Length: 304
Image (cartoon, rainbow, N blue to C red):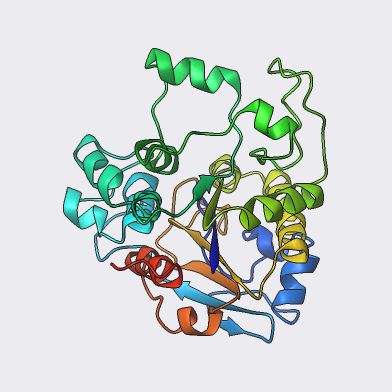
């Protein structure tokens, strides 16, 4: 069995107000098809259909204050309550004291230690590697977990060969970053490329951080475009992936984009979308961010 973890930065379950929540302003035909025409909101947080299960997940980690990316993502990828371990929510990058936990206990590390194959499907431009090697750019939890597990980050060359996925799905800025060989594609086509990557690995992650950026900018137009592109990408993944042998799990670290009246994160529950193999079982086990890693490892038959 294979697992695709689609990480969505800063996506919570909000109100049905289209003036604040872009989910109720955007055109999301694939997501609405999955959920029989519905979308989650604070008055109806859980949705189960013949295609998928969407469950509300507590992202507060039983700690006061607003959830943050560093501790939230560390929790997702290790199963350890990182906010409690650190003493508070922290972000956007993981605190130094949690780096060894991420390196030693992430899902990436566990998969590699079990002789499985894992990949972070995002492509990174040359300037990213230049900055990180120079020490002027810090690693996020996802990139740190991948690198410390001995899994190299994918490059513009991988993207050119359709062996990686652009952060925005459509490759809009690669030429201006100096990668002239990288041609634009549709989000649906990127979904097809991602499905092929999923087929080649036991565990695949894609990190979609543009949702959190759109939330902080409080731009309804940008938020709508960001969600509509995600909808098209996910449709492409599902259309081409083998769901009889693949679990697709989409999860977020904290709320943000669902309430554009706020510039900050929220304490709203986050949606966990489950499709494919084993989704019913996982839907009854996941309640907190601490449950994600154990459930992924169980699906991959890796002992905890």
